[in-house]
Image (cartoon, rainbow, N blue to C red; front, side, top):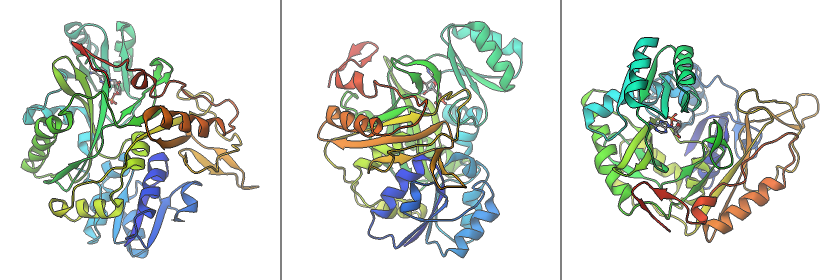
Length: 421
Ligand code: AMP
């Protein structure tokens, strides 16, 4: 199978590692890829959000499967253009990707499907925003309606800051605060059949102890020993299948990766958000534990044959990834710094580039790379991931020092009860 992978971040590097490990893959082409992916795939240049260009590249490279990593191409309709060429594609249509592309659309689907989520209002002016903020009270949750690369959400006790964020965004969703630990559940689906991957937890805030601004994600681990038993079955029954049924009913079936972001509240799991693609950096840890050949799984979802796919197999143990971010991230990331020590297996490239004049590896984004490791238990995986990150030199870099710590120490509490590993 010849596979074309679209994207060039850490998620795509993790996907590339999974795809080349599948003996059914004869060639991997990545567009645009990154310096980490370069050792695994043939790199081609393409504008990932240009549907015609990606479809033409899929034809030119004789791809048997196209895997679209990021959300922007999906929302732009790249999967539709590839599918129109008769080539199987892993990733939802532009219409179905609205589950991520518009928070208001996602809320509408959830309401119609009876999915448990935070109560919310769509607001477009100061007056309606203020009314919604006062109804729910602090902490205030204000979300940009459109794609914002995971950074359009403000959670704050400061009413003025909440109002200011709403004004900046224009159209927002204001919703009630969900109290409880967060879980990311990835579900591979062909629109009807659905297979959940291992639940993972990511760390959205920049600083240790969940302080500082929201980011695209500073680290992750899997599996979640502390998660309530039956969590995945409950979420498949109460969230995933009703949502897939509602999308079919609307004539826009969702096929690809449904990312369910959950808060485990005292009243049970509640959906915080849907995404239409693998999450970054959770993909790094989930795929590190997946034993089932990845390309075969994604091909089954792309061709509507997931119901016949064998049950997924997982490696024993745990996986942890720690993100190394550039100085100034997330507000004003500095790029162009020379990176050394990034060659160890387990280093996944997210925002890196080769300098034109001398080929040196340099930072090219906010989240630059991550160290991903597995181990017989969470503590061993964590130590190995930090050893990887400690071996990298990036001037001014930032990383959290507490990835997976609360889980290892049994300090994760679900409101209304403490669940220990
Ligand atoms: P989102 O882009 O919707 O995933 O939001 C980013 C982050 O903001 C989430 O991972 C949560 O940490 C936080 N967040 C979003 N919505 C809520 C909510 N209703 N209650 C509490 N925290 C939230």
